Image (cartoon, rainbow, N blue to C red; front, side, top):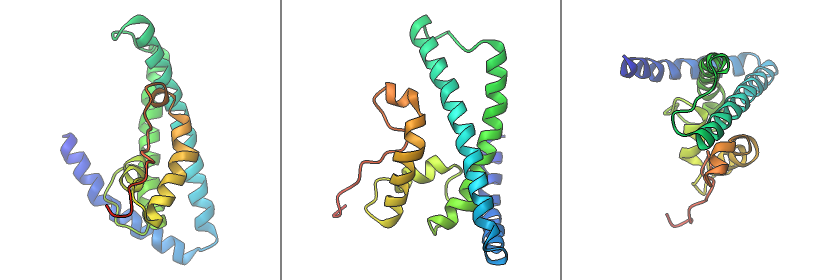
Length: 159
């Protein structure tokens, strides 16, 4: 079932990209506003989810692996996760695909930015900008573990 859902989302993404490109052509002044609203909404959901993930990480670190969020916050996290992934998928297919001038090969913005973040191209610069300034600062769990959510270490030009 999960594989079928992922396949459906991958097949739907190019149509969302085409609709977004058409909207950009049709309403060139309105499209950036809509893209910013979608970006900010996704970023707010991402921040809340990362905060809940960090609280869960601290609980597990303090009380053991079996610890989890209480029932109420866990239910809220499930709703936030569903809405957040939906926004992330739409942001990737409608905005970042056009911003990076590429086909929508990934389902989320994080996957797309990780794909390009190490490259020494203009796409890599854009991916590193969003990773360093917008996404990595909100992922407290990865920082506590000494990792980065978006890999921003640039490859050498010969690679």
